[in-house]
Figure 1 (spheres, rainbow, N blue to C red):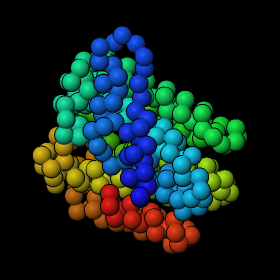
Figure 2: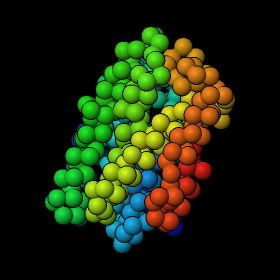
Figure 3: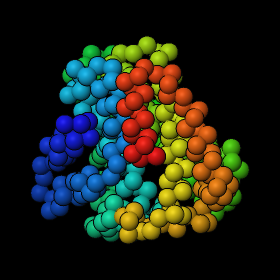
Length: 279
């Protein structure tokens, strides 16, 4: 069983739920988690652990699940009428369309907080649990994904410079991807020097991920992708700012700058496989 299969089996067994007399809240909690997706961030964490300390893979599954909860909450909130006002995500109606806005907001809130509860309960040393909580909060919170999303919303109809767009997506997208790798390093108790190097590779991978997403938006159709495409024509995107050809070249340049050969061979091989599959 590869790490994605391992993770999907763990996700299926550990879908969040709460005892109450609410008629559909548990169903709403599950909807986006069961709707598919790449599980890219969870796999990044697990690939580090598989490469460095495979004996900790089972322990690491809940940390990967925490990342999936955070990522899914961010998508649910991103789809809301106050933000992207999206109708579909992963080939199904967005949560506020399936239910209502209040339910979508509260499901997002629940997944956000459940992620940290999972990290608190990990069967690891207290010092490692604290590092994991700190890394996730730092990169998914105010100084990471939140300010990135705030900038994206505020400047939606205002053209940004390339450096500003890079700042936006470093925070909105790349920091959580980099955190996924760093959390794997922390579980394995790698040195701070090695963890920092791998985190910096993650920041580059995050920008590559966003550029690739922008490229997909203009080159694929809605049916194949499972969500609306060609809807970013007026938004700040790498393709809109630099054109498709330059965006493709920038993606290739960043891939080279990752310099995965400097990592140990097993981790380099595992990361290359994920890059080839998703980027």
